[in-house]
Image 1 (cartoon, protein in one colour):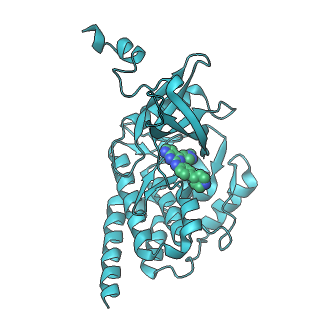
Image 2 (cartoon, rainbow, N blue to C red):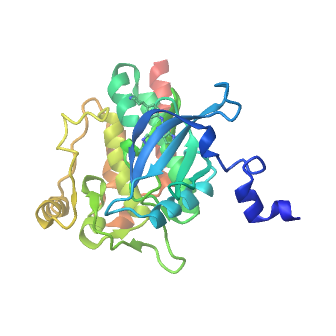
Length: 308
Ligand SMILES: C=CCCn1cc(-c2nc(Nc3ccc(C4CCNCC4)cc3)nc3[nH]ccc23)cn1
């Protein structure tokens, strides 16, 4: 029937719950900046009586690094992901006037993990950090089953849904690994978060599930150091990989065995997980399944220790 045609669905918002009409999307406040764009808190209020739901709306900010095509890929990626540990896609909003599109997602009230840890450091204990770590692991395990490589796994891209639930967000750099290869080679120069990059990403722009594992190790370190920038080498080591000096230096010290030291009060078993993720040779790094099991085992130990 014509009412099921893609065009009909796209043009008739009331029939397609994934299409948000701009005139009902009421801006409230800014939420943050991600890859390719900024995210705003809006209320989708078709009845106009403030009973509508709060949503997070990501708008593309076209600049030298990001294009409409990249943004469309991010929307397509998020729209096929259905996992408790990945931020939920709600739909899109076309504003014809600006011929542009916005990505509508579920609003997570506590914001990014970085801010949460910094403002809650005194009541986030080891057990809660291990719970968050195991949830990120499960989200990444799901992503890998669909052959996606996130490429930007970092505490800034983890969102806190509740006191006991975190979700992976920002799929702007996510790529799908071709069926005949085990890695994805990027050519785009652009700003690269090299501190979260595995050696092979810095040296050869070679991204794989195993480079996501390396980044997960950095996220573990961020978690257990409460994302405290002071007690660690400058994390804002965002730089053009084209800046050979910094990325070459980092690649060299990593090759010579330098790694981040254990965060203060970090349980030895957790630090050993980080070291596993930071194996120079990507084949020696664990899988997210293995990491998840090891984290569950440490959580079990913590429970028993608590019982004394
Ligand atoms: C993924 C990181 C890069 C891009 N990005 C995504 C978001 C984002 N944020 C939220 N909620 C949120 C809630 C409270 C606060 C506050 C602000 C004032 N200071 C304290 C913290 C901030 C954010 N929900 C979301 N759903 C989907 C995306 C999304 C934000 N930035």
